[in-house]
Length: 335
Image 1 (cartoon, rainbow, N blue to C red):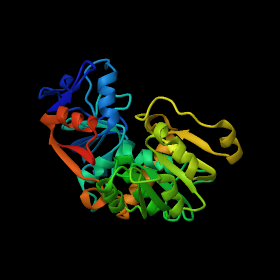
Image 2: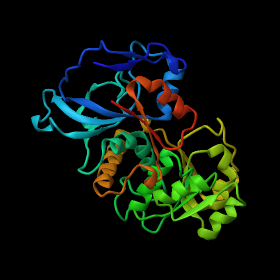
Image 3: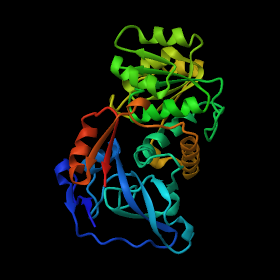
Image 4: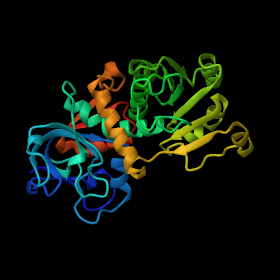
């Protein structure tokens, strides 16, 4: 079968196409998925660039496809099931950039009717990260559902990104009032398409004043992509007891915060890395995301604020480069 593999860390040219890998057989508790679409995330190229694999590694955590075989202990009825895949390559040698993939059955989740393979391959890491961030506020729910965030105000920094897009859509589904900060009108249009009720262009004026204009009492929770850059803004718009849930370090390796002010206002900064959160939190995210998919509350495409960029399997290196270069939207590999 065809697969993309690498055996050393480095730039995208370490990725190579092979047609010699055998089709794997599922073991106990496993399913085999005929992969239709593989999704690319920042952690995929970062893992490839920064960590030398122990042997031959297939990249990419997210994907979608059809179950075509099951191992002992898995219901035979799962054969033919359309699924979305999460964490395929986490602590494993087999990601989704290959024609067939074997993985634990719980990591191939039924894809609701009406949800496309493109949508299924777009949600894994971004939507799970967004779910975790949205459930970290004081007194917040463990699992999102309609009404779970009713009465709360959420600010999504970088609403045109993949995690930001998922955070906007999930927060709206859960009943929150959603604001988003963006870097210009084009990205503002994407955040609005995702469902943000109020959008602030932080380059067009005083962002804190603009956010406070929409949320005079402050925001309850911030889903933060740039904690270093936005620390002052976050402090200015949080209400007492508020939380910043940050999931990226592209704005720098350190954040400086005023300890006394955080104490007095009971503010919290919480890091999010989806791979290392508790298993129960992952399963809560999977269940909530699947419910949101079934309700039509998660969408992709330009009309949903997340443009799609398609590459064939043979151009996986170019797909990785597109994500590394900051492509706006979701990069997908079609098998």
